[in-house]
Image (tube, rainbow over the protein chains, first blue to last red):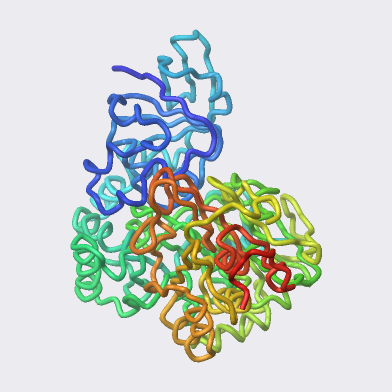
Length: 162
Length: 432
């Protein structure tokens, strides 16, 4: 499976990821507009399994969950950033996309082939040959990821409770 | 062990004696606020999927403000869905088209010191002006809270801002926040900003709400202000019931802050943030003379009664320049009623302001007042990201209501102190 990196800088905000005028639209109609003001090539070319890499404060701004959900819809399976805006970070986990704090994000180049191991907290850049270790997602939140997001996680919990 | 205000509230919500920054805890939620954008339209499918009901309908407040009044059929359908949901799920705390959620909540006395409150909107930190913890959540988190009544958080570090001095004329809380966006930056994620110092005691509740509201732009989990008599009086005046020990909701004197910053506001001048970031701010003189197609006074940040009064001080007896347009969207129905009663609205409309519906509106690129390609707007709102208020190639400058009103008179970015001093440049036809 392709693990190509899409690489962006600091402060990629929720208005760029999910423009306000698209908020009434269903996600399939909104998706082509993701990042259109920032990188018009992204939405049309991203493939399932790709990795989204960003700098500081990814997802600052609105609480709109579309900002994270649209990345998942377009195929992004892992998000790496130097730092995250709090609501965006929570939203990513809640829709089932792992988000890892990655201080060396700037060393990744567009199109690099990345292998991300969530369990051990390792990132292997197969293009450059470099290996990185990152903080793993706390176990309690990893349960949400493993379930595929908060709603399926709650479904499981409720099923256990019954 | 000494605790900050946020530690005390989280400890209470988590059922612990004390908590430390970095602890991950589960908090019981005292109140959940939703709006038409992030609320029932997102919640309903998830409730159905979970085959679950609400944890406690009496602890949920729903306020329509994003797609109001409906300007197209999609918006109308969302609002109808919201109203149907409220009926079907027995939610009594429903405020339909009464204003922007962050302004409406305290108008009805919902918030009080010590509460742990969750809001389905990023500007939820506004509620921190009432001594509570109030943070923003996306819609799946909201669904989880609506069903279980609890959520996780990591206990945040606190950044303390000590404010002293007195505002010079035409300077306001908005200018403090535009300054802080520049000096603290917008990446204070998973931290809390707490405002204190002798200046806070004399600051009105609505101005305090600007400080906590724009904690969002600092990237903070929430903004907080300790309980005091001004706050408690305001809550009681709006129908809220305050606990006897409410004044205890403050940080201990020896609490550990991650950082402490002091600002003497006496020397502060009006600030303007240029496109496309609130952190891109500078004293107004840096941008004076930039032509503006639109001047916008609106949103939870900048259209409460006091904001409208600031604009009126500048606009009284003067006329908006024919080179621009001034749009005013009062933040709530009560704001509008009060602005009619005290004559503020008359001053604004006589100056040529165009009155828009009470709603989030153009601040979020929704509803009336959005921008065309190439247009420039100066706005009393909180965010000026690219494309935020309309076309991707539009440009938004952020400023206080004073500065937006002054710019409306001039047709370009204008220092409001020059209007007040009557020293507006020759060649401007706007002075009466």
